[in-house]
Length: 547
Image (cartoon, rainbow, N blue to C red; front, side, top):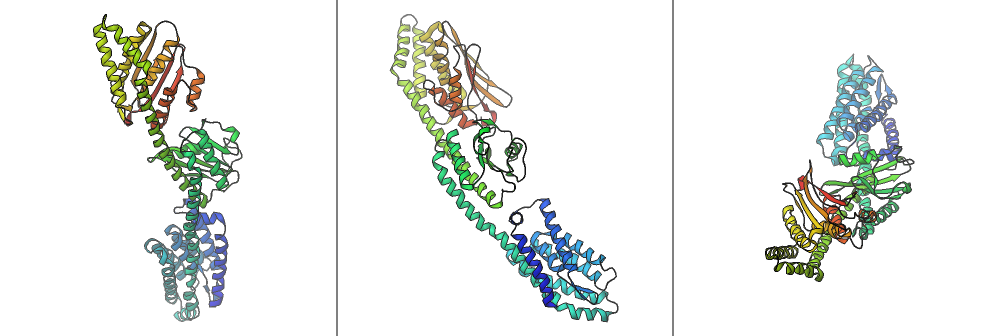
């Protein structure tokens, strides 16, 4: 009888073994958290196992030598109360209903429910490494309780004693299979540690190959990064986005995606908003025809989502646990590299801004023109000459004291006024400058307004005949502060706007490009440049919370 019981248990172990070879089952077991749907499927499977254990039992004078308690104990210990208790109740009620009035039906009902509760307690209170041995002991105690209840409920008691004498030993010893099932399933769960190590190594290899392209982040470098990732993980397509646009897309369907293509995927938008990794392993919406599996992982800087890494497959159910593990690690590395790259780029741009300011300060023609304007005013307008000397002194001192730290906007405007006064003295009636400044307390990077004013004067006002006006404004909006410069000059060339937006340096607009890059690195979006019916309007917005 003991051998027959072990045969039933062996059959159960074989079924479980082959189930564990199925990749989808492995993924569920290797997860740290499972969805209600996954728990429901696990519960259903173990209920079927328990019912099968009852039907495959060996009849002994109205009792059944079976593996039901083994299944219940295994379910509860492996997957917790929701699975263990439900399997215990369902299989216990089933055992009672198929033999109502039988000698062992009520004892089996009682111990099935108790086994589910005991197994759940072991799951909650026992160290994972010791659950298999505790499960064996608990299973044996539950079967021993069954034997006691059979004697108690049997009529006459001698019948109960006779049944127990025949089934007690095989039923109690058979609980050793609880430990075997637990160890078998836990061996699959523990595989994820080895998988994680291998995938971490793959992520590091990819990071090492992509590292050179993070030195300067632009559409071309991001495209190459996506190409490397796609090749290493054998994906059909890989993309990197910011919060609004697709920055790079490589692979299947690439012809549909241009630089700065607006994000249309609902899944991507949800991942950005929820800051969660999202997976779709089935057919997606019409925005991505032909794609069946998609993994979207948020990219972060200082714990704030700044974009996503997206991995596409044309085959369903390709987003496995190993791939997800690798992609998460890779996204963390990419986020760090992008953040470091931006910090380095900001320092470089700040250094260039400082260098440009110093060069402007000591440019012979600038000094010559400024001094010439002062000299021509000394006799006729001595007060004006003194003011210009103060303006030139303040302008030069500000540029020499430049740092890469943010400063109060009003201090920046003082430097702008010094610059404007010198230029107005040079160009006389041709130049009119107006200030529209709200009372705001906001800090901005140094030397971001003066290049815009210089651009408006040199490339705007002076390109047309007659008088022109430059308007410098700081406006408080609902959630932001808008800082900008508008002019009534010739109007900026659309080609220049296109070059700046696509981060191509225009030969005569280096200062404008520099400001665009610095603002974009700090606030996530660069300058807004508009060609007006007459002139140009250039501005950028700063969130109030960064002030």
